Length: 363
Ligand SMILES: [Zn+2]
Ligand SMILES: [Zn+2]
Ligand SMILES: [Zn+2]
Image (cartoon, rainbow, N blue to C red; front, side):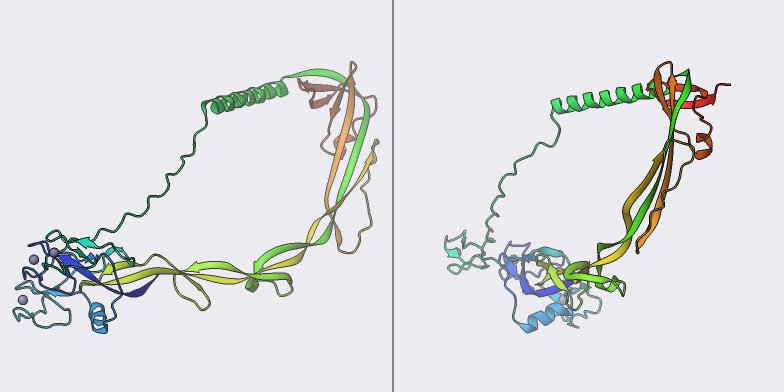
């Protein structure tokens, strides 16, 4: 984050002896002449306007004021001697600085009534124009109350929860039933009454596929379709061409009676995001041969240019008849498959879902 200075504004402080508000740059109370103690903080004025006086700004930039170790009087950081008692200020303690006193207050404040004579005064005034009495601080009108938010029901209704639990319960019961049925097996004797095989070969083709990348990350031969400006990253420091995004200005105590209005900014860096096409191997076609014998063949289609063979799959099935019921078994490979001659008899381990779990020769 980069801190940017918007400008400088007056602060004020309240005299702990008589309660009078004083300008930040005043080192003594205008009313009772008491020096501002080092533990009395500067506060924000009701309406802040940026200071044009270069000397004041230079003073604010010079560093926090110091308090005389002998009489307590506030002196500028640049002073060698106390303006009040002429004491040496080399050991003087600097005021605290850098605290945020509040969001920058630019907007006008309402007039304020003198509690002594009742006259109306400008909201930024410290003293009554009529009688000179100290004025209370103008009250900034409360920001308009945001419309009450309609609270959305976040939880589920009782009925919904009940139904969901019911569904979950049924799913669990179905799963358990399935596992039980799949594992409960019985043995039957079956006779082979048919076989089949299926051999498939995937054909892949080089296909143009669209993708996106930043221009500096594109391959040299990338086929660019179009490019546009997009936010690439947000960084703390300024950069050429970056978009500055700043937060709400706020006022910071410089320890001199003058506040610095600052803004925290980040920088959005934009760059060219390009859509391009690239050739990639993609599934194009699946070629399959099937048969019901023991001499399966792989399909051998002619490949076009920019095509190649992809994944190959082989599946085998054996059909049994056991006392009038049909069962299907899938051997793992060709070697196992060739054992199931037509009419041969096998002991089938069959589960309650009619799936053949294993076969053994009935000899
Ligand atoms: Zn006072
Ligand atoms: Zn002094
Ligand atoms: Zn008055």
